[in-house]
Image (cartoon, rainbow, N blue to C red):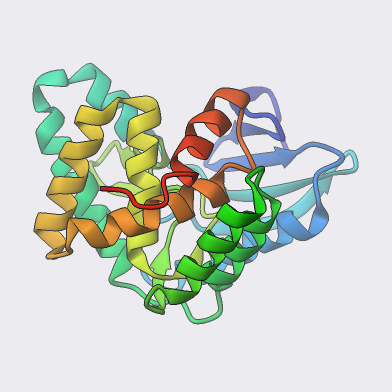
Length: 249
């Protein structure tokens, strides 16, 4: 296994390319259970027939856990959008179509979205009254079993050299209500691109999927609270400000 070519460095892992393989090497103190769960998620999503990198093996390197999967040669949708600003709307259209395709799938063995969110809300730095309200809201939301990516974003789409889109990073995948996933993507647009792009994304998604915008908006405080337990200080502050908006309009 050749670890000379670094693709990306994150807080808890480093990603390498070794020929036609992609090696995600986790830090020594990273949870074994989380590594195995991520690999299992990805293997289960493979079975839906979506274009995703296939798992090759899970192994250890110098005492650190690693997930080895196919390397997809190409550029992220994020890179392509920055390089082609005039075609931004065309690529946003493709992005939304991909998200709708993901949500058309079911993956019955994945963890439930509501269970994960309840755990995360319990850990969030919010007062007990708001936490109670968010738990109650979450329980009252319709129960679905659609495939949810959990971090559907332009940097997690790779357009291969032969122009085929692949979706990567399935570590947060669950099954549940697709509108929660849309709320997550909306918040990512707000954080990274600003509110104008976020609004454009939400309008387009709701139009294409025939989803009421108010329905997605009801998920936003719930999703923000559950996402606030990870990430940097600036992101956490932004998300917590959303978590406290009990009636978003």
